Length: 443
Image (tube, rainbow, N blue to C red; front, side):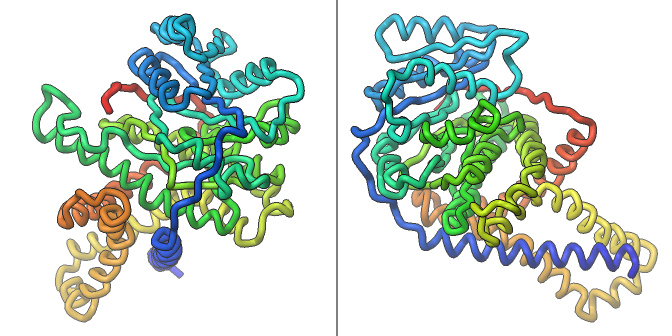
């Protein structure tokens, strides 16, 4: 078998496998129903907000959280900010808000979000009165720009979430707060603003469409992931995870996914709900988005070391292992897939240039139909999310716009292959640093 034959076979296998996966998650997405609420008064609620140079948004976020959830305690981790973040937090605490400031300083600071969250966990543990029931204490991680929905605590207290004693963590749906901002880049050209608006909308579509659909399906396989924003954790579950290393959160760049794996290995289940949500800022810069996604992809690759433990664990079914394995394999498959897809395209282009008559004959005898079908399937796998997004999330969007967003998502998805290659290269070189995402404070 030639290298070309191998690449064609690989691209076909990868394409068919992904098409089948999309069919499965779309089915679950269409069948999902709202979760019943519960009574939040029987729980202690704590919000943890990790911060590094967040003066643009932290004051508004703390005020928002206190007004929405007046009984909750707010824990801000200042990871050696060089701006006024700590000053703003202390001023609000002095004004009477139930805010606790956890300060980290170099050389111990800026070592990763997981370490910042561990600092908040230990600070909270040291402040809990004796006899506190850890099953009734919930820590919810919110980004510095996070805006949880008003019904958050009621949904988290419901029977599908912490009302179920087996649940250790719950991830809520993530939405983009600036998805409909008309002029995201004041003073810039119309084209620049149009690109920024589209990028924000695609991020909202991505989280509320395919990512949400994957999480809904994982409820059946018992492999729900927790995210960095809007993850709620039962204190007793965090203690169970911390028993292994002393800290709940690990060192991976995708510390949230790593925590979810450790939760499941410790015998706890993770829940997911779309009935409550958290809003965050979408990124308006392609460069910032690629930097963020490279970090996520590299973090997923780092978590591959857990696969032997997952395989031998009784906490995972065979289907659950396959789902987790597929998720962690995605960046690796994209590295392979990039070359599997590019090689036949390159060979076809060479033949079109060197042997135009042969190429025309090939296209005229079924080749054009085969290529068209291949492209149709590849684009449809992503384009379908545009109409689904309109139907289930944003009904004010027109049908034409929804279809256009779906087609744009197919182009947007091409970037994940470049992201995977970059993440792989960083992993090979042992790079772990990452650039902080800037906030604008625009919602």
